[in-house]
Image 1 (tube, rainbow, N blue to C red):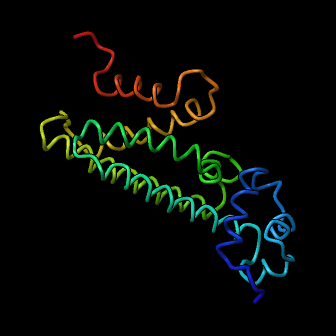
Image 2: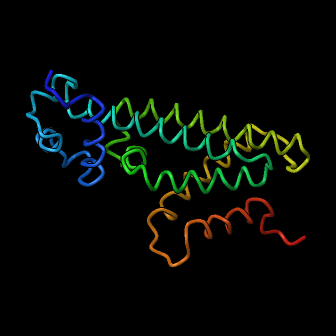
Length: 192
């Protein structure tokens, strides 16, 4: 194969191009130009643009998972661990444009591999949230009747907050907005 090009270099360049132009507007020709090779070089590694996109999304999914685990692993306090998880999740999604778009853009969510990946990601997110919530319950910090249901509810709420938090051009930082949301999640809005 051609010197200086490999699957990883194609995926890295494709990540940039897909992030800039989106899946629909990106062409194999643009990706090939990006890595400084002909389209035939891409077809040695990938069968189609969808195949390249799949590799990009898989790479970003692994990056997301690793960064989240690393972020929460360093903390022992359940409240802080939960806070770090929410903040890290939103910040990482902001960085991983392709991953976020794959799960939120309607025509992309219809791709079979995106549906499977979303299901896997959702499952892993609930497991990670369950571990944080269970730690808090075990330490007596959280009062949770059903950890599984609570983790599912939090994961659903976070998905609903993605677009407003990531697309809003507000003077208030994502972290400060998330801190306000955390106050509501932890203490509610009911006067005690």
